[in-house]
Each structure stands twice: as C-alpha cells, then as structure tokens.
Image (tube, rainbow, N blue to C red):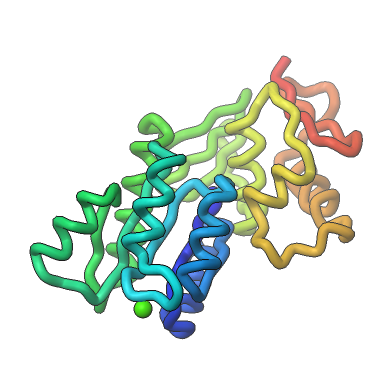
Length: 221
Ligand code: CA
C-alpha cells in the first residue's frame, strides 16, 4: 500500500515516513502544497496524510481538488488546527479522518489501518493457496509454518496476492512497494522475488507460481 504525506515540517515528515515504512507501507513525501497536489492527482496512492498549513496550497485546497477526481481514496488531516470548527471544516471538504498535532504515532497508525481496512472491504487476511498473510498482525504463514519476511518482502507479497491472477508489471510493483526515489534500472525486484520464492519455498510444482518474464504474474492453479 502506498501513502502520500504532504507536510512542510521536515522533521515530522521524516518521522512519519520512517514509522510508516517500518510498517511496510511505501511512502512518498511532498513538502509543499503544490507538489502534494500534483502527486496526489497522479492517482497512485492508497491514502493521503495532509497537513493543513502548507506553502503554495493549503491542505484544504488539496483535499477539495483531490475529491473531485478521487471519491474513494482515504484522506487523513494531520494538523495543528485544533478547533471544533476547523475539524468540521476538514471533514466537510472530504477528509475521512482528522488528527490534531501533537499526535501519537501509534494512534495515527491505527487510524491509517482503519481507513485502509474500510477501503479494501474489511480484509485483514489475504490468502493464496496455503499462504496466509495477516495484515493486522503482520504475519505470514505457509501452512503451519510462520515465515519471517522483511518489510519490503511483506509489501511485495501483499501486492502480489491482492493482484492474484493478474499481471503485475515492474512499474506497478515499484509504484506500490517502493517510493519515488527508486532506481528503475536496478534488478532489486528480481532479488526480492527470488528471496520470496526461497522463503516461501515456492516451486513450479506447487499450487502457486511466480513467473518472471519481464512482468511478474502470480497464478493460482
Ligand atoms: Ca505546516
């Protein structure tokens, strides 16, 4: 899942990015309202976290513009604007949730999860053959055996299972799992796919196949 943070306080932005990446999200940061709006309108995000007071364009303007094109994508305000009237206004322009600064990361994380749960139809477990990925507990089991994955491996597996039966191109994988600073020329995706295959002990004879042919395709037989 890919999250856009629009926040001009670099310290807060970095803190959030690091915390969310540790929870296996792919995270991009925009430090101005204009850049934030441009990235948001690319449509590549599963959730937006918006500050209100930003250079060039306010979070309110971003949210209003964004809602004209994207009706479903969750938006969370994270702002020092803390009056009841401001909270109501934030929700009225289309935000799904409103968190006041100073905030606790654990609470923000739960609120992010709630929004993503709601927007992806309440799924907390993703299943592919004998592989079960639990989004809340952050665990992966193959049959009875728990498989230890890194954050990126977990995100990649999540993406592949969510798209089972469909072609998952390199571009889609990069956009969903890595951030915008990813070097498109590296073979890092192949390395991760190979590592996943090894850890999950996936062989061609099994119910699950991950094919590597320039595009990746996860097929359930
Ligand atoms: Ca600000």
